[in-house]
Amino acid sequence: MKRVGSIFGWVLALVVLSIASINIYIHSTTRQYLYTNLSEVPKAEVALIPGAPLLADGTPAPIFTDRVNIALALYKAGKVAKILVSGDNSTLSHNEVNPVRVLLLREGIPAQDIFLDHAGFDTYSSMYRAKYIFGVSSLIIATQSFHLPRAVFIARALGMEAYGMNADVGHILLRNYVREVFSDEKALFDLAFQVRPKFLGDAIPIMGDGRKYP
Image 1 (cartoon, one colour):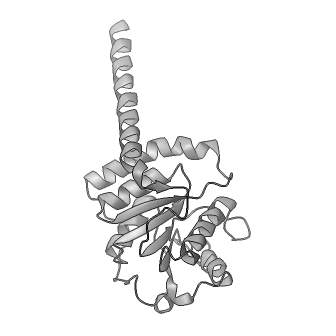
Image 2 (cartoon, helix red, strand yellow):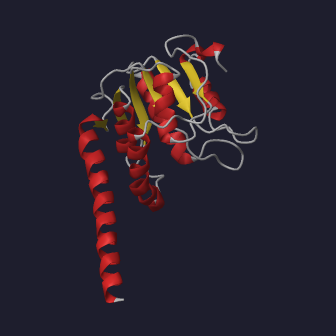
Image 3 (cartoon, one colour):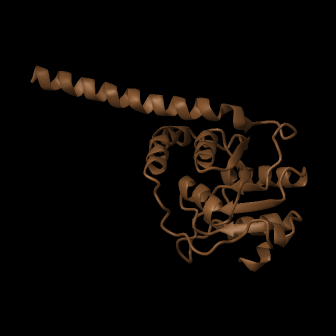
């Protein structure tokens, strides 16, 4: 029994060490591409807004709205030419992207510069589809600090020139950081095995006219 406990202890230690090593690697390799100052972030083709929860009335939750506001600031500062909203629209009753489009239009973003990815079910799918469906070569990801390293890591591993713009405004919960610890491992698995998202589809050129692709 003592031997079994010892083996279990070693296995647990190895798992913890592996998780910590992956997290440290992802954070250390992306740190130089993360920004908190709008004036310092390099220009790119597109600002990508990753999906996030909606409120009961169907409008974006505060953490989602913070991402939208960063993308708006990037566009209005001339840092990007297009905005790509990626989120979960897996059912008729759950649509993360259309409410964001409404907010962007309300803020004066031209409809032709707004693109919607209805199949961004997770970060990997959002980045994969940005690359292979929308043809994005450079992007600034507008999201919170807990999410930025993984998002930028995946985007760069897929061959895009990716930067991250911090959207922290105080609407973050501890569970966001806890969940991210284990999400890093999934990201590495998806990249290592070149996992294809559930949905792909026809090409949608990001530098075209967003009004053609509702």
